[in-house]
Length: 485
Image (tube, rainbow, N blue to C red):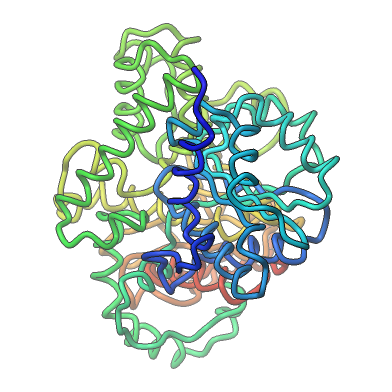
């Protein structure tokens, strides 16, 4: 079926109001941390590459591109040289990229200077990897940014795409960004350049910051329930926010994207697999138990897990170490956002009354914030298990360092007795420092030194979860990611 050029022009005209000298409607004044990187690549790219904005649905990728387009217009780029198109639209998807570009130039003849293409949901472009490669190699007069909620060829097409695009991996909103989008007036918190700065603080510094952070705690808990999705963050009702989140995941990702992009036919089994992961968020994945409970074969379950990862709904962490033992070991699974599990299971605000569930949600949020902060540095995240089933929740390997994080989100203050796994790992690897994420704002500061068999000096910093997540999000906006943890 052929789509007429007039129909394509009508659609594109709606998506590109600047062709009519109109402003972009409802463009928010706040910007995500990733905006700075996207703007740099579109205005003054470090290398001749396209930009891939990769991440789950409804996390603000389209808004980022429109903000970048708006900045180009304000910098004097001719309106005719900027195109935004979403291949989620049935007519554009049906017509194909070449017909869309022809319709653009039929409507808007090229002006002097570079062309800027912003293409949404590019996974629906036929042979998109080859097309992008061709654009980068042969169209030096164009700069290209494209998004994908589910990029089935990102891994498969890496060989042809090497050096052709730069990936900006987006997570859901950080706690800092959530506070910005809510436009809340809260006491200022002291900025830090690195978590290491905290080891130089005085007791008075910890006390003053704890006092200032008191109003943040309630908002942090609401953030865990609402989630880091711009749309749900701004909905007044938490019940409505969770319903929207559930619809986006179940209806748009599991039912539509999975069938359209990956040819999944057993959608109900896929839904059940995702529900199982929601019930085991932050836990070790027992494939045998999953297969037995859901009555699916192991290859099918394994395929579902990989697809959920490809659509940015889950993260998988291997155990710490390398070699055959690691390959055979179980993965740890985190959902893409702490609010997904309560939304999918329709829990409302009951999460806040369940200490165990609240602890899991906090651990998921902590991982996401650390991942978002250090992803540009090629961080490797793992979990650690030692003797007597002692564990460390998260181990970050970044810039040649091993930095462990343990989450203890509970009312009691944290002492050495609760940190046997963390202390064992630090002693074993002779680590200079480690971190414990706590609940109470006064459970904040350096843990009193603990005798070590090796006499190695490891400093353990206790940080309340709202502060850690705030600083990691604010850090993205203020400090280029070259420092270490």
